[in-house]
Length: 212
Ligand SMILES: Nc1ncnc2c1ncn2[C@@H]1O[C@H](COP(=O)(O)OP(=O)(O)OP(=O)(O)O)[C@@H](O)[C@H]1O
Ligand SMILES: Nc1nc2c(ncn2[C@@H]2O[C@H](COP(=O)(O)O)[C@@H](O)[C@H]2O)c(=O)[nH]1
Image (cartoon, rainbow, N blue to C red; front, side):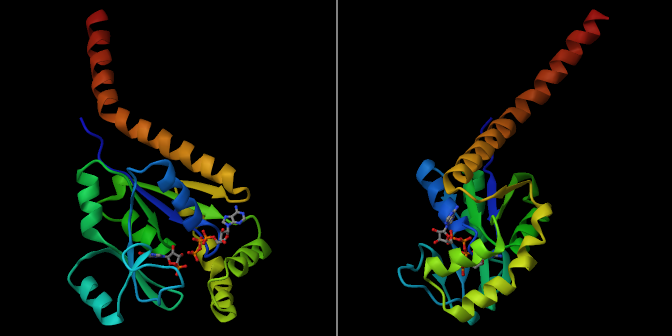
């Protein structure tokens, strides 16, 4: 039986390294589908519509939510973000794994939905708060005001760390990448074995009954 796709959710405070790690995972496994979110935030330099995000107006975003086209959505740092439903459903049915880079609100909505059996959620912690700030500044993508807002909200995000299946501290990026690959590989194996294991244990039970 073909394994149904996994929904691999990465969350962290802004700047801890989710997008960098998601990029590395996509290089590692080309079959991994990335859930391209819709957002009302303006595009940063170098971001392409349909690649990093679908950049939409607030009206267009709200229309998509009203039509039931979003798997989850949330207001994050004053902008709306949401994961379009259709590509995720197609991927699951095709047995493909989907990678999400979303905040705790979105992770919670998907984990509380009918898709929860497919969820593999991973929270990425920064090594320290000064290092988180340093990373946001070094990224060079956001104004000091935006960085300040994201730092102010960082504890709000971190405080949800224990609702996740796995938690990693992203100190050394190569070590974190390796840990993510190990987790994903193990979870794929565990979930692909599940149906056969149930049959196997039933068969052992029958054999045991015949013995006694
Ligand atoms: N382990 C690490 N050590 C040092 N720098 C890192 C590490 N991981 C990521 N970075 C750097 O930190 C910055 C922020 O990383 P990234 O953009 O991946 O964060 P993010 O969690 O996706 O943030 P956001 O939620 O705002 O999208 C980038 O410049 C990235 O290169
Ligand atoms: N709930 C959702 N959160 C999302 C989604 N897409 C991104 N995000 C989170 O927003 C912040 C900021 O992202 P940035 O690209 O502006 O730096 C970050 O924590 C993302 O994980 C989404 O579809 N739903």
